[in-house]
Length: 351
Length: 231
Image (cartoon, rainbow over all chains, first blue to last red; front, side, top):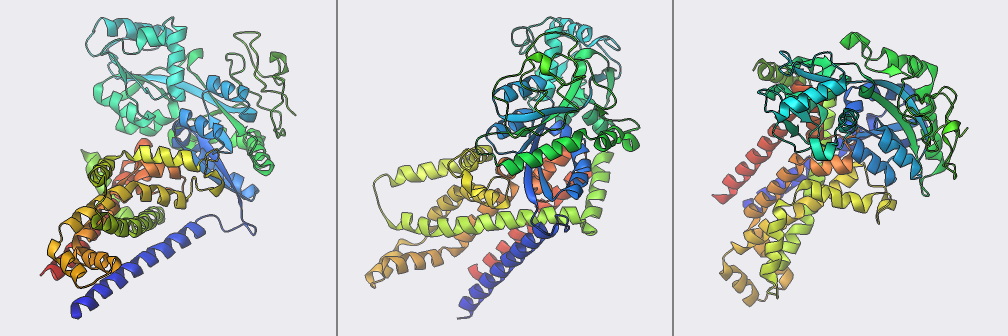
């Protein structure tokens, strides 16, 4: 008898425990969103990359945008490749990445509207403090060439670690190899023990490089956030091929509700507004002593045609223009310095 | 090495002061994994009883498949569920992606095999005579299953707890289905992955300690129950 009672008691306690957790779980999820909204806020999913999210910029901008609009931003950061895939499947409403070539493919596929570039910064090449390969202050291309030659010669302590995860940062690295005159898949990838493909996020790759005394290419924001845990120092910080452009676009597909595209457009216009541009420029100054991002309002970088999207025309379109616009329709001031007549892929004027 | 020491110190501080962010993440983790465990138990225990009670063609093969699925990678479950509940997937209209409910679904699917398999094993450990006696006394199948499950309740309880352990410690489903959205779907494991990626080791250590503390509480409870009733 008493045994039965005990079992009952235990069961009751477990159920009670679960219920408490359940209820508290519910209440916490309900109370955490800012209790301003009288109507339930619209939920907008932003797919973004780890390197952008990890700098904290989005957490910094999110409350500002939510204060202006009855909206709850759900930000998920899972790496450029995954973020673009989510957007293609219609699982996100806004795509925020730094992989211009992949973005243009995305836009060309009709998966998005209103691509706007809002900021840029520079990738940097970091390495051990004693710089065993001696590449300090070279151009990125010359530095990579030196790393390749010494790596293939099995020079002691010369290693390069690549993200190896298909991220925007890895794409940038591949572009440097390309402009240095190497075919990445044939000459660089798996070319020897000097070239290590990590398959990890930026922070973990930096740590790996630090432990191994290797060189790697990183976005500056993650490096600054990590600096204190690393024995690495920036060796190459300047060069056109290190340009890192951040762009935003609204997801479009047949099922995408118009009100979500409208809210996405509001967010895009928020990012390119003078106030937010100033905020972006100030972000990180107090913590790192320098801006992590250069807003387009300050400097519009020179890049491959189409990479820097429109940065001033307000986003209004609710669907992609059916005919792919020609290069000349790029917005006033949009830069296309290095090459001349590549198609601008329907970015630019849709106002 | 000082990283570890200072990390632990800050971790303890975050826990003792009931840091709201840490608490919210821990509660959400408990909510999701408890719910998944209960759902999975509600499915696995009766189903395990049915599998145990019936001899059918391919039973051994079925058990082998179930046991193989013990070690299904969490990201694979995450990917499968994602493909189903993606807006472009067959269940997209439910809007489960990036919600705690979607994560509960994913974790339930993840832990059903291990719970089911262990329940069947647990029932197999019950003396065959009990079943025969029950049936000879005229028990219906339902009564028979019920009594045998009662007989094996401690082994079943540990199966359930093992399922909970797998649910609360997994990161694949939580990341792919939940999306690690702050305040919405960020749980202990995904928060640890994120904070480590951001170089905030103390926060990660604090969350790791909480995860271990939850495991400790669960195991101690299990041991108390078992010791009291096994005697």
